[in-house]
Length: 307
Image (cartoon, rainbow, N blue to C red; front, side):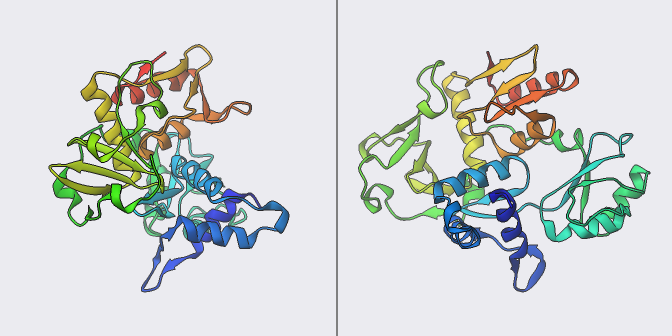
């Protein structure tokens, strides 16, 4: 079993004690420990590798990331290309619901399969059958209508996420705090993260700790951000600086290179659904001609420059 499949199984099997229909979130450390104990000794993986797997699963819409380096399975969803193409649909998210999806759609397949072939053929009937099991049916178009726009974190939404410790004092490592500071249009996203000291800290700063947490500093207060809010914030900071991120896009073959780029999960999930992986280039997606304009539209909404 692949490591990603083990992570999915672990997160799907851990349920909230008093609400079994919902998965329980686990810390990165707990997930790494459980994966380590499930692998043979000669197949050990590091915590950093587990975090990379989790980020990939988050991009695919399988996993949700929260504050404190916690992760849980995403709500169950079945994806169809469009309402008229229902011969094959894809299940994503909480695998505790997978068998119910098979039963609702009368697939006759093994209940472990995530590519489903419904015997129910009406889009409305499929949607209602899945809804009765707590599963959403979405088309690709549905899934992109409400993509969030890059924006500054809203303080009223951060109530309860205050970080009362001084991060510069609580962390002992030199250079363990970075701020997102776009300075040039030629910078990669990684280059825009710069190590800072407390003396360099200015209001409206997005910070990243060596332990993986994201912080927002505004009006003398520090708040912890979820990875998704942090991702939208850094694209907002690009806009404020007038320095959009450059993204490699080979238009004719429809090849999008996302190596080294962190996207908000909603955007990443959409692009993943519309494309296929490049077998020889990691984090590179291949788009059919009919999907290329839509991919460009999403990146334009993030104010990226396609080059």
